[in-house]
Length: 447
Image (cartoon, rainbow, N blue to C red):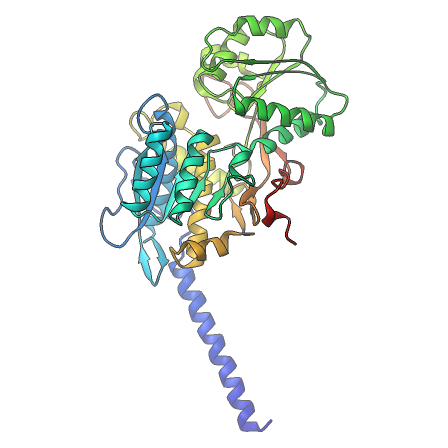
């Protein structure tokens, strides 16, 4: 090589380096960072964002009216928090432009026929770049099916049934950023493998979800704690008001733990009546950190209740602690319904949905595009550092793989004045609660 050619080559390499440096610098300046925006101006009752122009359109696919309206209320503040944070930083650089995010509500009323029409409206009329939702896996399935038909990304942060991503229902456009039923059963079983209790009674709602999680819990209890015994098992109709007959049977079995995946109001009523009747078995489940029933039974009676979830405010990391601090500071200024203790801390479903949305927008930011194919390419197999640790998007079935958390409630704690609250989170490592690959999903069998 001549000296001249060598100099030319070095100059070219230098220029490439300069270009890469400039590109990296520009991206870092343009990139949003979670919690960097001005959150002091966030009001969940009066969320502001562009309503016209060239925006990134996000549809919240949930119930905002009817008996399930609490779901829309919960996820509206979670998605709104993230959107406000990013918009306060100027938006996201996609498709060659810096764009802010617009939220569009799609009220499913938790009714299948209405949900389908709402999903189609979001995709065809509102032209959302992403739909997110929703409580009730039967409604979530409708959302993800419609989203796939119109090649729209669907972010699932609240549908737990493993059937949503099985061989029959999986589609490339849906990503689940929460756990699924096998994760729940495995994580709880692993937790009890580290504790002395041996006798368990399962008391769940009598529909698909209650039965599926029960089967998972029994399966993994055999794996992690083979000496354990299921001393009883019962399933009750939804929206029960009188649990006394069931609890009387539990008391006669000598059970040490009542494992229940009951969600409110069933979970609340079960908790209150178990404590009123003086049932000796302790409660363990997914929704027993609800402030209202804990306040009703009184702080001391909440001690020892065990709560499991894929996000808890008590996970002790600098990022999660900062998230809690910023959130609860703002909570003091919010009006009804967000001034209630339910929203004092960004825990459980609220916090989990916040982390899911940050992840999605981070993926979009790195894809530098609203094009779903480019988003899929980035997200499959992606690793993301959330407030509570690393999350991985399993490429073949789009299932989040992540640690989950258990807290044994105590009283008094820093979390609430009039009820039991969290203690330090017990971490169930992802390797002990990773769900098996969906049977029959061909893309998961390819090496």
